[in-house]
Image (tube, rainbow, N blue to C red; front, side, top):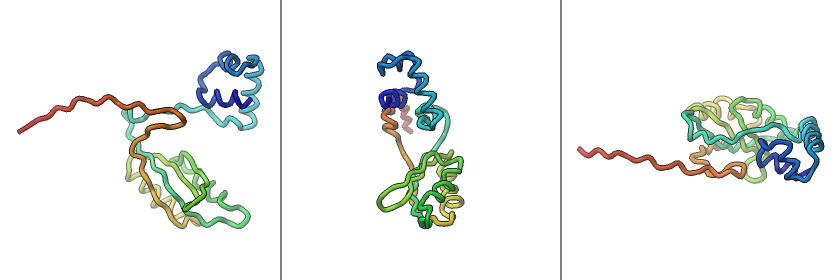
Length: 159
């Protein structure tokens, strides 16, 4: 069954017939397994990876290192739950090392991201420090390579 999950993770647009053929399983077994995975929350959803730089949409993505005071009996879970409730937050990870949580957020502008960090994230009880890193260019995400855009010809004007 891990073969089926791997196939879905690689390309969730594959049809049950295609998945059955690739996983060497009967189609009905594939359909039943997918239903079971969805019901048991093994499969949480299906997403497209979009290269937003190729669209008109302006967006800024930031990785924020967050230092937290863990709570007795709850560790980092309570503060992580508070953070992931915000609409701007795409991902939250518990980390080992110099900081505790990695928070990935998106906004329309650098100012919007900075306001989120300064006004909503940093003031949270139990947050003791943050460091924000803006993502300048994506090269690869979820095993998919973002292809280079063809250079547009520049027009030089000399005066």
